[in-house]
Amino acid sequence: EAEVAQSPRYKITEKSQAVAFWCDPISGHATLYWYRQILGQGPELLVQFQDESVVDDSQLPKDRFSAERLKGVDSTLKIQPAELGDSAMYLCASSMVQGLNTEAFFGQGTRLTVV
Amino acid sequence: AQTVTQSQPEMSVQEAETVTLSCTYDTSESDYYLFWYKQPPSRQMILVIRQEAYKQQNATENRFSVNFQKAAKSFSLKISDSQLGDAAMYFCAYGGGGLTFGKGTHLIIQP
Image 1 (cartoon, each protein chain N blue to C red):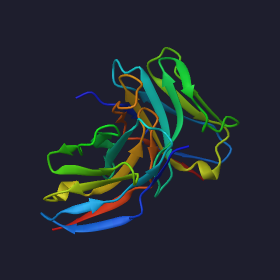
Image 2: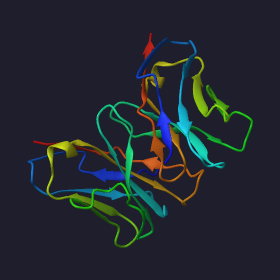
Image 3: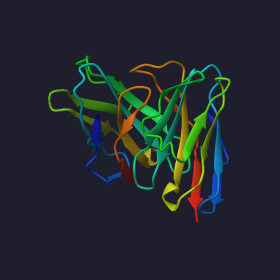
Image 4: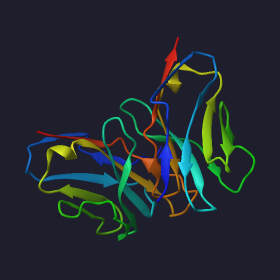
């Protein structure tokens, strides 16, 4: 069964360092999302791509976060510099199309700890 | 902006019993979807059930059903014949594509 792949599964980084996460969506899925899930809370959307274009990045802290999906397939989310408050689970999800009823398929996430 | 509220941080139910998880939301839109997602420990989030706002009939998927009250902006999930494998975090979500999630309810199944 096709799955959304994310790596690494776990990442520990020091404050002020740069860190990057990678996501490979289900083949053929045009829409890709990055969510941040702080412990004990629900996921919050950071950025949404339609193919290689950003559809929504209104909640992305652009002073330190960046996201790209250059060829419209896999995607990278970067944080530079990392802060203690960035410790969270970063989830990637994909869907076949963009729409109200579209099911999003989630990866297992990358758990980031900033020390 | 849409908001989703789950007022039960944790629920516990005996195996084979029925449990209902609550969710309320706020939106000014007339057409939208609502979802329940399940997040098992250390595993990816999966869709449990979805409901279109324009459909009056409540969605059902095997042991899972919803009670959708559009006027009250309420969207509860009922799990019948609870099984040990149902233990997980359950998130109510609004929209489609870019979802707005509630804070989740931790469901414990007592054997």
